Image (cartoon, rainbow over the protein chains, first blue to last red):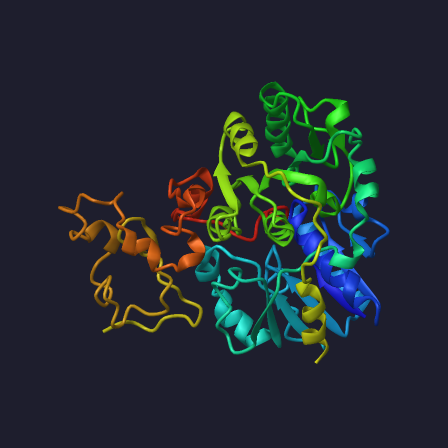
Length: 323
Length: 106
């Protein structure tokens, strides 16, 4: 069995892990270890071992150690945090009889320096996978590092057809596209997305607005809320998107070639503003809801029907892990 | 002469030019900041930052060093904003940073 360690808040670690697991599980059992509060939404797509995100850090550390021991993985794939998000892997990797693979999303260089991440990774990991250009600034030059294309939770041939997407978005017959607000990130950040929806409805002069979110944000009316996952299934009917500048939202918008108006949320380990600025001019950074609404209305593209043709880097990643 | 140090010793002194941060070198021997342990607070002791007044100015060469993926100067005005955001603030160095304590971070 392959075990993917995907602890961390929000959607990002879980979604990237699912992207890999969906490809890998065609040939072997794969389990994901997560403490994402959104895990229940994704349940069923993959084998999840879900830890309580509210439990004390010391309890989570113990639960992680126990889950790895019970699983006895042939391959341990660790997302983002080489030592574990709480440092709990530092003492067990040496004695774990498994192939060890690190998924190297961007990391704050202060953290890399503070706990000597480079030396730790060089000593303990057999392979470092950089899931997309720009993510490997801290460890991508190690001899065991390999860069792939961005990992996506859907491959191009898995995207629902346009009619199905229009139904999911509850679009009227005369509506071709909508502005899509993707409310991800931490639960307390949902309010900002709700305010963007509210601003869009006031400014938008009839432009259809939909908000994809696991829970309906305040100020987002019921008729605009689309509780659906994964959001990238819906991007073919979006003329522009408002979201965060986390790994998955940016990668998905680049894959669909749809403009993204993003708020770069502060994170302890991720550098969202840097990612947004590196995105080949396809991401516009904003801070205030009204600014987001005005920007996205200015950027809306009258897009022809787009047939998805992107490449899912998770396929190459699985092949790299296998050998 | 520097006394023997424990194997896991890391220098606790503050270093840096614009922002103070922990040194974390494993020995003060040959250190250009504390000069072999002679300076208690190398960040405070620096004098070369005074007299420089253009901290907020970056000419185009600064951004071109980061390559065309940043979109500067290639006709994409939306990508050209170099205003710093609150997310950049999180990247700035804070003395006493604590990592690996919050299991819900990202």
